Image (cartoon, rainbow, N blue to C red):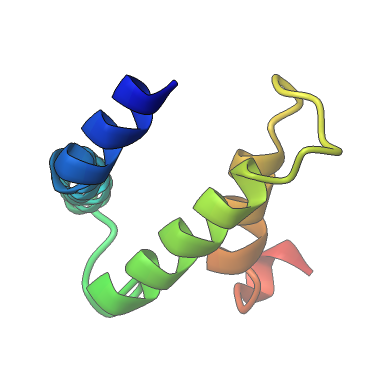
Length: 88
């Protein structure tokens, strides 16, 4: 147990860098796909997409929601399309 705690105490920054890089790649990939699908900067700004992505990550951390139900995707749709008059 001491070996694990010493290793984690000395190498925590590697895990943090990996986690940040993973989320950056996923966010940039989502942004790229939105732009390739024709969803422009006026419809979904990059900062709004980052906020929605962050909230989606928080929704994925909820332990009471079983996986596979699409809660994260539902959050994305709900937040990104909330002000769309065609969905009323």
